[in-house]
Structures are given as structure tokens and as C-alpha cells.
Length: 77
Image 1 (tube, rainbow, N blue to C red):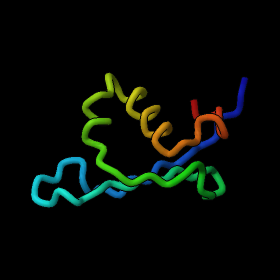
Image 2: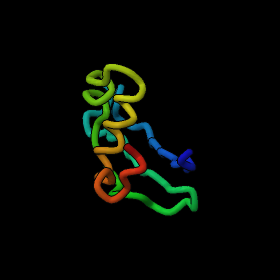
Image 3: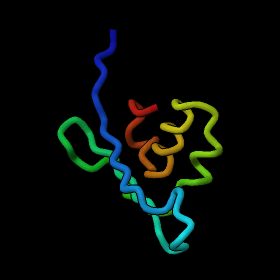
Image 4: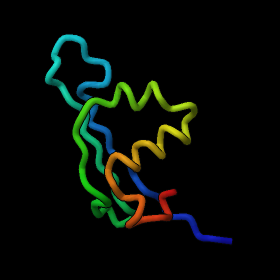
């Protein structure tokens, strides 16, 4: 059996549902078990990503793709 590692997704909620400030943005980072940065921090609006996801697993996979860490860290797939 493969050993699973915990990864942490930090979402700084800023824009996904903000109608009052069009410049408001969300921020995402992923941390590995040693709390080291994985991939590239991402900033933007998550609204379209959230609405496009068909289930929770699909949503998490979309977040992983946004921080560009799929090729470097296939364990996240």
C-alpha cells in the first residue's frame, strides 16, 4: 500500500463572490507536509473554477492545476 502524504491548500478568499470590488482577488498556495511551498502561488478570481467543477475532487484538481504543480508533484494527482 502506498503511503499518503498530507498537502495543504491555503485559499485567501478575496474575489470568488465579491460583487462590490471588481479588483478583489483570491490567492492560492499549496504546502507540502514540511510546510514548504509547492508550485507557484496563484492570484485571480476562483468563481469560474468553482462553478465549473463537477464535484469536490474535480474542484481540488482544478486548484492544483492553477498553482502549476502537477508535473513536479504527481502525487497530488
